[in-house]
Amino acid sequence: MRNVTVTGSLIIALLAATLLIYQNFETDAHAQTNQRTPGTKLLSISNPTNTGTQLILVDPDSKHISVYSVDSGSGKITLQSSRNAYWDFHVDEFNATSPTPREIQSLIR
Image (tube, rainbow, N blue to C red; front, side, top):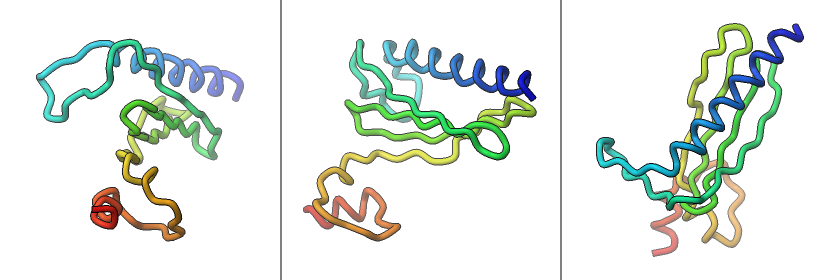
């Protein structure tokens, strides 16, 4: 069990380090434009789960949030959720499980 925990922690550390290094490079080869400026940092939060680890990455500059699960048995990393929370931070009060960023944007405009 300790071996699995150590392996999961190493995978998370490698993923976080890779993302931190990657954020300093901009490429035009992908469909979505990288809007991070060189030198910015990602915030990361990890939580143990029944099957491994949940990793949450937040880019405070672009307001993007991504949630990953890391399976402790296989080491497989899966993107569970990702969203631009920019419009979320422009709503003073909202208690529903939805809206999408587009719905929030339409409320503001």
